[in-house]
Every structure is written in C-alpha cells, then in structure tokens.
Image 1 (cartoon, rainbow, N blue to C red):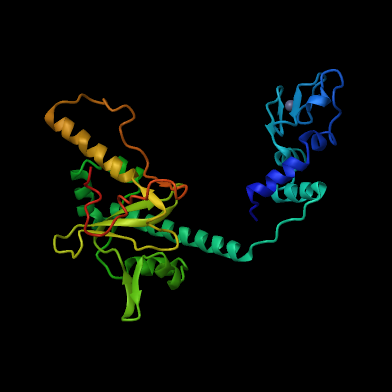
Image 2 (image 1 turned 45 degrees about the horizontal axis):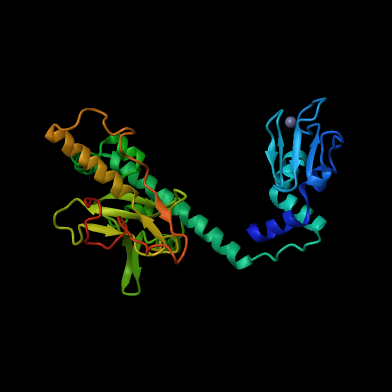
Length: 313
Ligand SMILES: [Zn+2]
C-alpha cells in the first residue's frame, strides 16, 4: 500500500534517526555530539575499525563516508534488516506510537484497474509498431520517411500503423486475454448502445502514442493515410487514463517540429551536419500539471480531431 508523505513525516518527526540507528550500532563517544544530534559510529554496512558512519537528527539522514550507504529512517531498516518498505513503516509507526492509516480499498482497486489499462495500451502500442514494420505498413513507412521521420525516430517514438481493418486490434487483444470492457475503457474500440458490434477506432492510420509524465501510454493520435478518411487526425477519447485537461502533451509536436525544421535547413543549405547538438529530438512526454495556479493545460497532439497537431510548429 501507499503511505501519505505526511504520515511518513510524522514518523520521522517523532523518532530521531539516532534512536533507530542507535539500537543497532554503538556511538563513538569522542566523535559524536549528542546535544547537537550529531552521531558517529563504525558502519553497520561494512567492516571498519574507525567510525565513518554518520547520523544526523536534524536532517533525519545517515551516511557512511566509507562505503557510501545512506538514507533515512525507513531505508536504514530495509537495508540493514531486509524489511520491505511497508514493513519498515509499520515497525516505526509502532515505535512512534502511531496507528497505521486505514487502507483505502477503493483507491487501491482503482490503482490496479488503471495499471491493467496501461498494460492494454502497451499491448496495442506493440501491435501498431509491428503493423508499421509489416508489409501492410509500407505506405505508412513511406509517409513517415517522407516527413523526415525515419526508422530511428519511428522506433524511438514507438510510431505504428493501425491496419485497414475493423477488428485487427480487437481480435489481437482478445487473443491476449484482454476483456472487451477494457478495450472500450481505453478508447481503442468504438462501441455504444446504437452500435451492434464494436470495432477498432483506428483504421489505416499512422499511430503516435501519447504518454504521461511517467512515460506510460495513455492515448494515441492517428493520422489517416487515405485522402478519403472522415477525419485526417483522430485522437483517443477521454478515458480513465487520458484526461485532456490534466496533462500537457507537447513532446512529439516538438520533436516533429524540430525534425521538420532540420529538414528545411538541409533543403535550404543553411545548416551543416549535426548543428543541433543532441539531434534535436527528445522523447515524447506529457508534463504533469501541478495545480490550479498553473497555466491551463494546452493539449497539443491530444487536441481535437481535425486540427493538425503533427504538423503544427
Ligand atoms: Zn559503511
């Protein structure tokens, strides 16, 4: 289970780190200054004869200048006694006279649900990646190569191709044991009361995964290859994983912009080779929005179908 930072801080505030470490080591009387909360001992993590292990109550940290081990109350126990983090928290909460917070069963269930949906998105992403490298993906590869998004960038940004099929992805995921409701919940299928048989949302499209700030795939943007497609750009709908107001998506747009600018430079002959340092392309990441005081979210690649997110500068 997870612990709130305030609960962990409460434990740290109630227990000086020297009281925990002091149960397992013998302080060096000459070097330590107990009135300052400054303690030295021979390190419990490596054998030594003169004390180079330091614990400081004011900081709530320990550090060994000999072997480099360092940490706080909880890591001391996990490292020295092999406890898991929750076990260390439980032990120290007991020593601090605090009762453990009640488990939030609902929040834990939601967390598990989200984790399984992230796995579904990951499976879909791999399927699209394979699609891009398949024979059917030839025109998608051609499209990307023509936009200066060559094989390296395709791999790095995990670009893909959704086949021209109403159920290729649906059948692929079903074969992997993904429940139909999860395919709907991730927005990968189009379904509804008026739709007798659900079907793949993305068909015959170049696929761009959209990730959250932890790098997990939360949505896709799809660019139609056929000129007759109803929407040139189609994005995942809002889902449990993907709330357009909560995240900023700017990575790929930036990468694409840079790639295109570089392309332009080359064309105009203004730019020598490798003038752009790291190549100018960074991984596609959304950025977390930290609070209401921040600027409103500005979805870029996410945006609405019909805009031109991949080409915008
Ligand atoms: Zn040490």
